[in-house]
Length: 209
Image 1 (cartoon, rainbow, N blue to C red):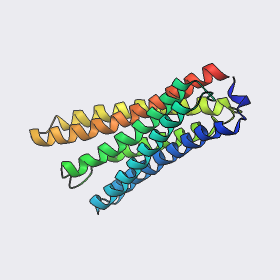
Image 2: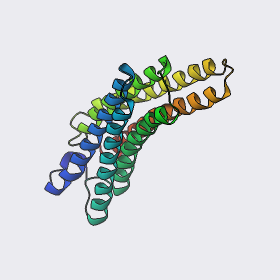
Image 3: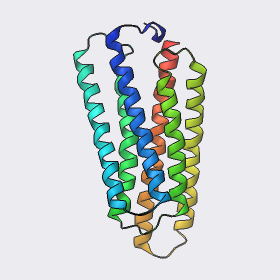
C-alpha cells in the first residue's frame, strides 16, 4: 500500500507520533543553542533537557507498544521502528552531550560547541519538515531535499569534529583533552543520528513513491 492512500483513521497515530518526536528533537536542539548562547543556570537548563529526553522516551515506548498491537500498519513495521528509534537517538545524544557539560564542569563553551549546536539545530528543522511530509508524500522532492541537507550538515559536523580535535591536541592538558574530546564526539554522533533519520526518509521514499 502506497503512502498516498493512507486514509485509515488508526494510521494517524503513527504520523502524529513521528511529528511529536520531531518537535521534541527541535525543542532539544533549540535548548542546546540557548545553553551556549547564555551559559548560565546550566543545571536548570539541563533539567529541562532531561525532561525533553524523558518525553522522547515516552513517545518511543508508545510507538513500540502500538506497533506490537497493530496488525495493519501504514508502512512496514520495520520502517516505523527504524524511524522511531532514529528520532529517539537524536534526542538522546543531544541530551547526553549537554549532560557532559555538567559532568566535566565546563565553565565556558568554545566555538566548536557553538558550531555543533547550530548544525544540530539546522538538521532538526530539516527533520521536522521531512516528517511532516510523510503523511501524504504529495511532495517527495521536499523530503528528498531534507535528506540532502541533513547529509550536508552531517558532513559539516564531521569537519567541525576534525577541526576541534586538531585544535585540542595542540594543548598540553591531558584531562582537558579527554573531557572536550568526549563532548565533541557526543555532539558529532548527534549529527550522525540525524543522518540516520534521513536514511529512513530515503528508504520510505524508495518503497512508497
